[in-house]
Image (cartoon, rainbow, N blue to C red):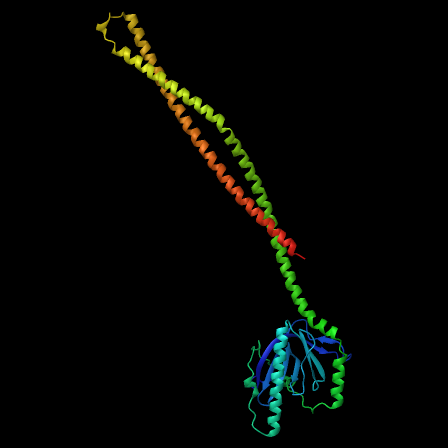
Length: 359
């Protein structure tokens, strides 16, 4: 078929069927998948054809005539009889909207074919009615023969006279004897296969997501348990703080007592140093040495007490800092535990929804 002569008008996708030539009752599918079905206009011969190609083979090559009728047998299936090809074609669509569009385009093409026949019979010049038909979709690939010029005969309409009354009656009888239930089942069978494949893929993705959620749930549970243990340890430390506070208060009292003793000793030392020899009788050498020794002992004791005081103050500051750190860590652990518990709750709700949605 020459692409310069044939012009595409409308294209869609559907599962193609042909009536069984032996039984005249059952449908024979053209393939397992949907095919492209197109309306073409031959400007040279002023004819319209419905064409569908499967591989290098013409599955449908039907010239539209004014006496043809496209019949909707279900919400997604339609058929028409081609007396020239001596067969009945059936199309199963994915939706009712696609079937309606194809049927409307069939009526438009049929009317255009009728006008073309009338003009040709009147001997007038023919104006292409195809220009009035808005193309809905461009075919995905041009319908070009792969076997050379000799294959072009597959697309040419077979010349024949109008069907006689006997042949028309036979075709009507063949259509009336067709099982409506079989037509609907066979038309929707492949569409259901595609739908089942999509559902199976979605189910596999849902199962994978559920497995991942379960793993995350186990990790969250383990982390939550670890946080509970840590919180329990910190609470125990906080509970032990009152005892430590009592020890700190006792240490503070001890420090105050030591400071008082240091001040007393300082006063005694100062008093001894300020004693004037002229105010009393000069002590003898032994008493003076003893006094000096006492002064040295007091100074040594005073230095030791000052060291103890500084050490107690350092210990007190460290205990206070440790207590503040423990409180802050308890607060952080409690907040983190709340977050993990919230995430755990969300995971459980997600698993519950997934379990309800799974068939």
